[in-house]
Image (tube, rainbow, N blue to C red):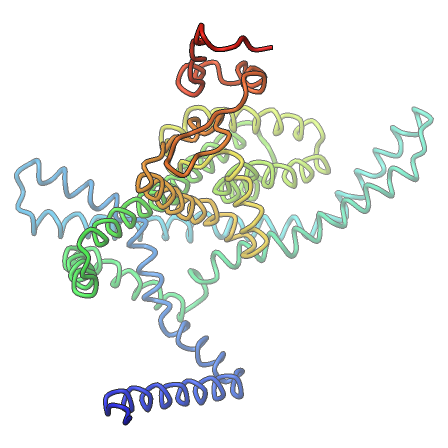
Amino acid sequence: MKMPSQKWLLYICLLLSGFALAVIFYLFTSQLSHTTDTIKGIFTALQPIFLGIIMTYLLYPLSNNFEQVMLRWGIRKKLARLVSVLSSAIFLVFLFFLFGYLVLPELISSITALLANFNGMLNEFLQRTSAILATLDLPAETITEQWKLAAEKFTAWLQNDLINTLLSITSGLFSVAKVAMNLIFGIFVMVYLLLSRDQFIGQSKKTLYAFCRNRKACSVVLDSVRQINQIFGGFLTGKVIDSLIIGVICFVSLSLLNIPYTMIISVVVGVTNIIPVFGPFIGAIPCAFLLLLTDPAKCLVFIIFIIILQQIDGNIIGPMILGDSTGLPAFWVLFSLLLFQYLLGFWGMIVGVPLFASFYYLIKQLVNYLLKQRELPVSSLDYTFIDRVTEDGTPLYLSPKTKKSFVHLFKKHKKEAIPEKPEQDPDSPAEP
């Protein structure tokens, strides 16, 4: 029996496709270094595009809210869109100017002075410590050696981690003509994207409906994208605003308290405040150590101030700006921070929480959908006292003794999760 010509054609196409993939894989692996350089070159060439997309994402809420206000005033949509976008661009340029003209020179001079005077500060601190320990008849050499080790680690952090982090943040923004051009082109890209955002959104949805025949699946995809955008946008934008406020409050307050190295401390506290949970400690500990070497009394004042500031931020400023933007339980926030810090370092601690929150949301939606398909309850508390579920979907609960041991933990859910014990049939034998 002869094989149909269509099957022969299909087999030939599959064979040629496999051969082509093998050739591409061989070329890619044999010239891996050249391919890597090419990819890096492409990313370098497209830096203004990426920078413009990031700025668009961060400034979209500001531009959109300003546009909605002008529409309520009766201004035409095209004019409102143009004015809101240009106002956002001017605001961004003003922030860059403010940082480059006021913050950056003061920060560089403070770091330079700190590195120049650090050894003298350390020796003076060790002498004072040794004198105090001698009066108390304590072993001064062991303690001073530990202080020297701590000072060496602090110096390494100051010269490597802090400066490299600040340079990684600012090198793409303030390094002579090339980066200035990237900034200018990035702002133009941002203006174009904000002006044409309706068109890009429409094209994305049109492409989705063109390639996906199942309209219900398209709706699910759109709802998921909206939720993920809300998680990312709410967290990142809120954290940036919150950190700017904390940095300004820290700078003004430390200046009034006459704390040395105010600019360095304010920048470190503001930048590390973006990191959830660990951020305040990551920024406060090295700053407190620096002040301890300079003036122990100022160090104590700084610690008290940071505790008060973080309480205000955690209970007033943060909830007002962020709310519950991620919806992650505290355990998964800690898990995502540790995981993405290992994978991506400092930037992983910033984007790790919203990224994991997006993944958590998708998994939650999938699990709830599968449970509804099987006509099972969705709430997690409904499964607390379930022993197993039969093939016909009937839940079997734990024994009464086991349930009683959990009742004090779930008093609120007791009536819903624990079914009432059925009355005993008088004709049935009594339980032992």
